[in-house]
Length: 166
Image (cartoon, rainbow, N blue to C red; front, side):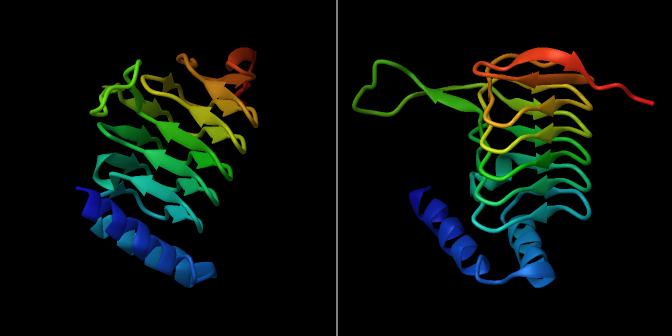
C-alpha cells in the first residue's frame, strides 16, 4: 500500500510541471486512471495531494484548488459545481488517542453537497456532511454538519447566515 501511495505522489509531482489546459487534462486523466470517480469538466490544480484516490468521488464541474490535501480512507464525496479554494484539507479519519505502536484510525465518511464554496485554508474533518449551496469562510475548521443554504465560518465553524437563492 505504501508503494502505491508513493507512486501516486511521484506521478502527481511530475504532472505539476505542466501548466494550463494541458496540465488540467493530464491530471484529470491520471486521477481517473487512479480510481477517482470523476464527473465531467473537473479541474484539479497543481500541488494537490490525494491519498487513496479510489475512495474519492468528484461531481461534474468541481474545482480542487492549488495545494489542497484530500485524504480518503473510506469515502469522501464532493457534489456538482463545488469549489475548494487553495490549501483546503479534507480528512475522513482521525488517529485513535493515545497513539499506540500500530496506527489505528477512527474513520467516518465526509460529504460535501453541490454548489458549495470552501474558502482557502479551511479544514473539513471526519464525519461532516455539508449541505447544498453552502459557503465555508476562509480559515474555518468544520467539525459538525452544516445545513443547506448556509454561510459558516470560524474555529470551529458555525452557521452565521443564509445563502439566499433567487
